[in-house]
Image 1 (cartoon, one colour):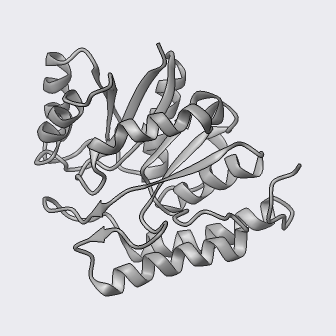
Image 2 (cartoon, helix red, strand yellow; image 1 turned 120 degrees about the vertical axis):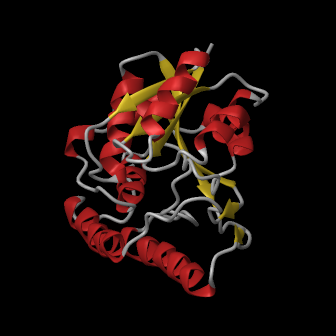
Length: 241
């Protein structure tokens, strides 16, 4: 059987984690969960341990400090690749990504190396965002497409499914991004290798519990990272044949 692992990085997500575990447990396909906790001061890590003790399909990876979304995911990817998972997903733990969408990612990944959840293909599917943030997100997607040449409608999104071979093709230790630009860097790296990338529509809902991790520093990093990626690949704007 092709095993699927969903990786959720957490920092102060105690309010959301039990409900997320229940939703994943009730999916129509078998899925395992890895919580990567960055030493949350609200006790999320301890709660994750308690949940993992009750569910054999749930696992926890503890990190000593909070040093960026990208590093948390890379730690989770390395953990997954050391085991026999064939489909490895990333998603937020605050229900901005709907766990009920997981099966359609796995289905799309049967014929793709990377599946991107898109908020903007064929329209805008974002709930409870102020206009300013929506304009920032859509403008960022267009900015990334113009500079890198990537044809995807939502290259900054963080709901994804990787086939094992796609992650194995990346030197995770060389990934530079720590914030949300991490999403752009991994997609760009896989796309430039000529691997198959698909998009599936999703509805993104702004979190109800807890607070957003977005900051001006994260935005600045993403703006600069796009140019670094372009120069790193020799100014190419398409995969090699």
